[in-house]
Image 1 (cartoon, helix red, strand yellow):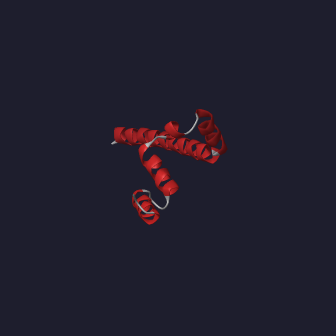
Image 2 (cartoon, rainbow, N blue to C red; image 1 turned 45 degrees about the vertical axis):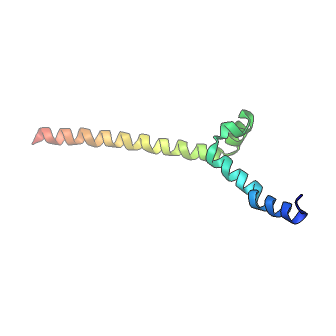
Image 3 (cartoon, rainbow, N blue to C red; image 1 turned 30 degrees about the horizontal axis):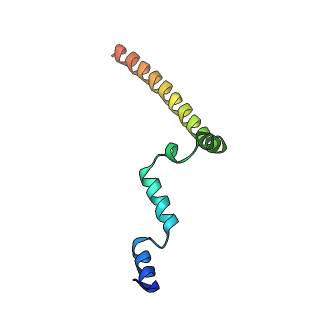
Length: 84
């Protein structure tokens, strides 16, 4: 038969002091959000974090503008090459 102290020591040795923190870390490293949260919760979170969506939209717009400018410069280079 074990003593209460032995039981407590055993529990302390096999279970981290911060069990919730350890569980969150394990879940974060080993599972995808879809495995953890309901689809509705993810959709709500996504909708409430629209600033990220806005930033992505702004970046796509910037990329599109840059692509257009590259095409203009490419045409200008071809035109200059034909004059040489």
